[in-house]
Each structure stands twice: as structure tokens, then as C-alpha cells.
Length: 419
Image (cartoon, rainbow, N blue to C red):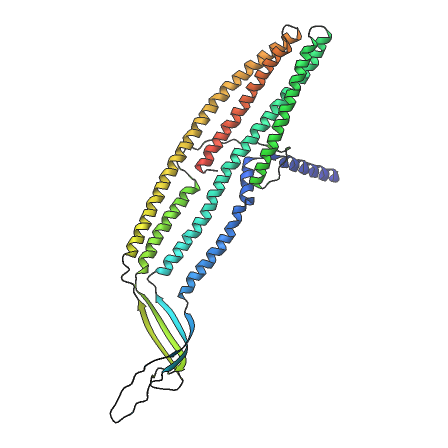
């Protein structure tokens, strides 16, 4: 008994897995795309590059050690004539080999500004990936619903094909009884072949679109996969969550930080330095022998005049910030137009679905009545096919509007950045 239970559980699990593997949801496509899309791999490289950039900025506070050397010959040297006393003369040839150590003490906030800028650049690069992924989701939405439309078209055509085959069998009985002509069966058979051709075309189109969806999501898909029609409600808030808005804010922040960096460039910089070397002469220029020497000191640099270069750069940064504001305004305007368009589509398809249901009901009644008259030889098979095709088109239009309704909802949600 225990063995039977275990087998039953295993078979149930396998059946459940099989069912899951044969179906696919839109959210699963989103999740797999985020995992498998090549651009996501850039995040690790961006992080590594950022870490190294910050380390390089920190090294600006580390002491710098240089080894310098030179050999020179002077055409003239210092000669101090003293009456009654001969001073040693300075050598014309001089040699130096020395270590130089510099330690930054105060940089006016420059390194801190560089660090803040790199932090913002890092955030911008990551946000650009989110923007690209947002665009990818919108592409996936379009392809996913295109496959759904083809699936529904495929199912309806097959249902019509099955029904037509059944009606063809009934027509054969009518021919045998002398109620219908053989031509009526030929008309039905021709329409069957026509539908089979349409089914094949739709199947090939679906296969093509599934390949596109597979490329976008990184999922291996086959024509046997069943895509679930997603359903969602509209959000009623006015907050746009598109990643582009955060990207715009980061670019403005970057401009502000560059302005702060610019203000630190002309501040005084203080540093300590020292030298230790061996040369001819040493610090005593009158000594003609090689000698060791050292010196230590404090220094500062101050670029207090730059011919207006800083002011012009500040104006450039201000202009760049204004350009970003115009980009935001343009983006918001186009986004609102797209959102209003999707809202109009949603309202249109909601009303269309209500009317389509009534049309399908009427078309079905007309078709059934038409078939009854066909069986009795009142009308031809061509007349019946007209009503059958009208019913098929009505059903297809209903299912198409149902799918397009949800597509418009998801277009709206992805445009707002809520998905």
C-alpha cells in the first residue's frame, strides 16, 4: 500500500510538472528575460569597474614616491671673488639621484567630489540597464499577445474545421437521399481544404513568433506550448514608475556634482614633501665632491586665475541641466499621449467585447437555422458556408477583442512602469 502511494505521488508530481512545462505565463517570460538577457551580465562588470575607480581615487591620499635622476653641464657657475681669499668654485658638471616623497594634506574637496561623481556614474549605468529591461518587457508583451492571437485563431479555425467535417458527413447523407446535389459536398470539401491551408499558415506564423519570444526570454519554446492569457486591473494612481525618470534625476545629480567639483578646482591645495638623494654637488654648491643630502618642507598650489575657464564650464553645466529638463518634459508628454491612447483602446475593447458576445449569439442562431434548411434542400451549401464563415468571424473577433483588451491593459501598465 505504501509503495502504491509513493508511485501515485511520483506520477502526480510528474503530471504536474508536465502541465507546468506545457504552459507559460507572461510574468514567467518577464522573469526569465531578466535572468537570461545578455545586458544583465554587464552589472557585474560595471560593479568591478566602479570598485577599481573608487580605489584609484583613494590612492590620491596615499604618499607618492618618485625616483629622479639627472646629469647636467653648466656654461657658467657662481664665482664670488674675495680679496686675499680664494673660495672653492662650483663645478660645471652636476649629477643628482634622489627620492622624492609627496603627501597631500588638503585638496579642497576635489577627491570627495570625484568619489561622489563615480558613485552617481555607477548608479546611472545600472539604471540604464533597468531602462533597457523595461523596453524589453514592452517588446515581450507585444510578442506574447501576438502569439495569443495566433493561438486563438488556430483554435477557432480547427473548431470550425471539425464542425465543417461533421456537416460534410451530414451532406453526404442528404446527397444519398436526393435532397442535396453532389456539388454541395464539393463546395464543403473545398472550404475544408481552404481552412486546412489557413490552419497551416497560422501554425507557421505561431512558430515564428515563438522563436522570437524564445530569443527575448532565453526560453526554449515549441509549438506545443500553451500561453496563458494574463489578466490585470488598471492602477488608479497618477504616479509614473518608469525607470527613465530616475535616470533623468541621476543625470541632473551628476551635473550638480560636476558643478561642485568645478568649484574645488581653484581652491588652494596643501601638501608636504621631502627629498633624499646623492649628487655632485649636494646642498653645498661649493662642494666639488659627491655627497648625500635631504630636505623636507610644506607647500601649496593655488590656481587663482584661469582666464574665465571655470565660469564658462559652469555655464556649460547649467545648459546641460536645462537640456535634461526639456528631455523630461518631452518624455512625459509622449508618455502621457501613449497612456491616453491605451486608455482609449481599453474602453473601446471593453465595449466591443460586450457587442461581440451578442453578435456571436445571433450568428450562431442564424447558422443553425441555415444548416437546418441545408439539410432540407432549401438552400445550397454555399449559402450555408456564408453563415458559417460569418459565425467564425464573429467568434474570432470576440476572442481577438478579449485578447486586445488585456494587451492594452498590460501596455498601459508597462508604459507606467508598474510591471
